Image: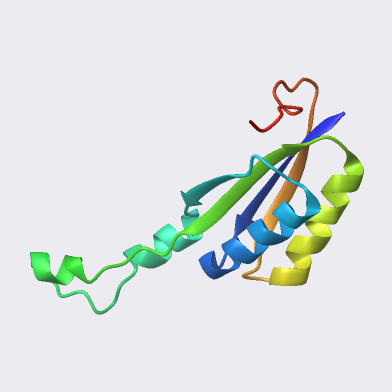
Length: 118
């Protein structure tokens, strides 16, 4: 059975090391998305330094911090275990705050996983 592995990486600087580690394990076809969570969105809304009547210049300085969401479908549980271990080696224990969130979903059918590179 195949598995979909999804990790939301809290610190975008950890994205490339995880990608490199997963690629070394033989994972291919990793998709990367910029994402944000409700907590970060709410934090961005609670800017106390914003003036009562903001100008365009006040908004230009606002920068939204984004997460990175990585996902890939892999062929077996052994690869899932290796991916989880590699990610936690880079970002730390996923049960700790501000590291990330990882989940795995069984995939009953997947096409194109055995695709050969040209």
